[in-house]
Length: 381
Image: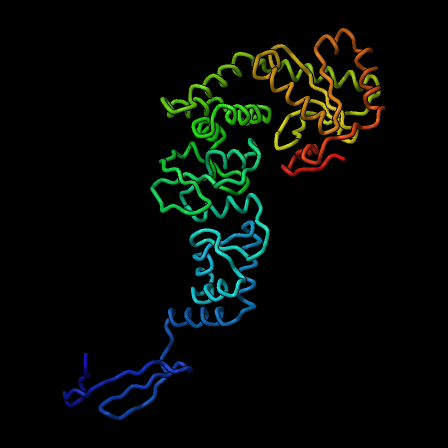
């Protein structure tokens, strides 16, 4: 509207100039300028706050440092925008070398080391809110497979433009196939193993399965659900065979009862108590060991025919003994006969093992690290 009606009904021209720095704007009515103060809108107030944030480098530093500290060193451009940092400021910091681009729209502090979790989180930020770590990357996140330098695998519901360092898999994952583990969205253990079998082959799937089984991460109902959805997929039959072998040879209760008798035998003999059912990481492999004396590098496995007599477990046991030996550990295997029929002989042998100096270990890649209750890794000297 170009004018406003006066008392006489005549129309006077009105023009409005831009607001000044003090919140005033000039209004010209009928050719006579006058200055009036107007009340700021909420949008203008936010804009001024935004300008103040953008203009203060210290404020930007705090915003970026806070995001990086809480998100494994990575953050997105949209997250900075939401905190009042403009694209112009972000671009200046990219040009100056303070920030670096990890993926499209995902940034890191230039020169700062990026952890495995940081690589995974950056991939999820690039993939969007519906992305989930999957395939071998999910297996690495669950500590079922050793870390890889290859691309990070994520599953997304719709096709996305290819990006360096990312492997996109397009699938509509049901809610039951997705979880959050250690703060990152990923596929469940069951779905991860099925995906690994399909994309990385039987050897990787078997390694992931046996590690998950040792850590009691296998949920039979979840495996059945995923296999029901994976009919005809490569590797699905192999995963079904692994599940059938575990079901056939599982003997719930027997192993824990035998462990209790073994611990009682040790207590009666005055042997200092071992750690029970500890996870040990050696050369990227994760093993569960029944009884361990970590400082002495001594490990004991309690064998029953049910849990250790079939092919998969038999081969894995030999692999574990070999790898622990390279890490400088002495290993022993106790059967029910060793515990119930010949306890004196068994006690004499474990005393001798504990009395000896720890073995020399192979190169540092074979250092054994014990997984603590909180998931941390503690080196064993």
